[in-house]
Image (cartoon, rainbow, N blue to C red; front, side, top):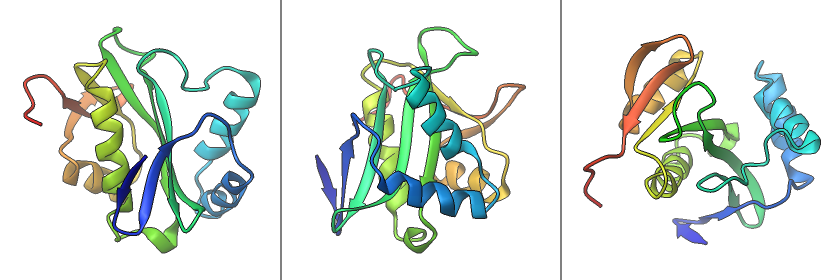
Length: 153
């Protein structure tokens, strides 16, 4: 477990009922990717359980306030990871929760992958990932990438 400020980040090995609260909030914002996360988990299509993968939850006073996963990028080679399903509850945005979550995902990724990619379709998401050190890329399967090779700790 990693503790920062008044929240903690830990690996999720099962989906909790609290995720349904985040899912409802995401749907209200027009995002369906947490619905896909739940469906893929239930079907077994993606449980973030292959070597190097993980699903992290951020908790504040025991309440799930953010989630994000790291998996192999299905559109690239085995040395490329992909950030997936990153979502921070509206009330927790601007409090460094998302940046702490992405930082933890990248630390985990560095053990397995040389590059991490992602796809976002919002200007806010793009700006956030730039602040996290990602660079824009021109690829039909990714909008941003970050090299983890030769990075100092």
